[in-house]
Length: 437
Image 1 (cartoon, rainbow, N blue to C red):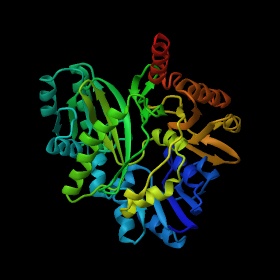
Image 2: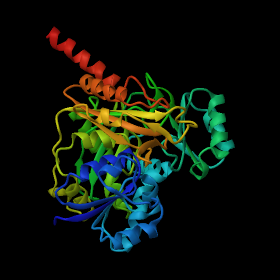
Image 3: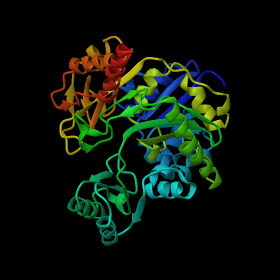
Image 4: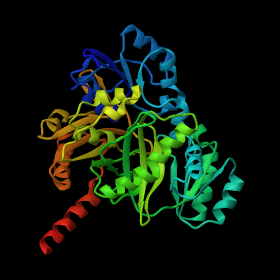
């Protein structure tokens, strides 16, 4: 692997800021670009005004700048076949081809694969019309989970507590609530337990587990309210014990990687399993075919190794030669979102205090929906900032992250006040047991 490489990251969110922040520290990188980037990414990479789905423009840019390696961040270009297009152009990249990205692009595809290969997940059925879907729901135990089959920016999952809510949801999705993503729906049983995120790199054969993480999907404190793309995260996830990691690898990850190879669509890239930890062990909620957001930010905050060789080995099929080192400390992130998110929100509001927040020891401010304009940072998205901190305990990391939040002056934004609450409860319980012992 040579030095002085030109790297292009595709995307504009907090995940891509974390990836750029991490890759910018690699001694192998000469020039780092990001398309299209955001206001924070501009501090560590050269931002290029190219849309993530404009494949010809991306390929032209790669050729003009002699790009050695492309890291694709978001799911949409992966599902649409950006890696396939880059392969055809002779440009090396990180991420799955379209046939493998269907694990995220179609929830029905993923569920069918689980059924065929015996991977533990919730019981389900697929529907392409409202009448059959409603008839099925009427015979099921409530609550029940209704999902748009395609990509819906993390918002295509609704938990219906009543039959009336379920029927309304079915009508709304088939009525165009999520556009083409809702042309088909998946209805599945509601699973009880604790959610966790588990990430691995795989080159289609070898599997390299990454650090564990846990995110907070609900918009409100106490994990209440509407589902979002994620309002906070921390790593590692205490619920993911060594025993649980082993069970996840043996019953979920390894069978999936083998199944995709068996189907002639080997998966290469990062495989992100959203898990429900139940009384009988881990069960798969869904797969994502890219790093999670905001989980990627807390993983990058804890990573000690150079990330680039691991990403390139994943693409080259040499992942067996790679190992990664992680900081033992806890990383915790609090998302600051625009008032109204996940529904309608105001754009182009001014954010101040970012320098003050970043100056706090062990605090990193990752940008998601921002842009630079006239010397100011403006909020342009729903989830706008990820205030990330490192601490020796979850409680300490939480306190540092919220001190960063307080330093930021943005009246049009909000955040949850309890990120990490489950892990903190575990810490308190653990200290009590130590005293009793």
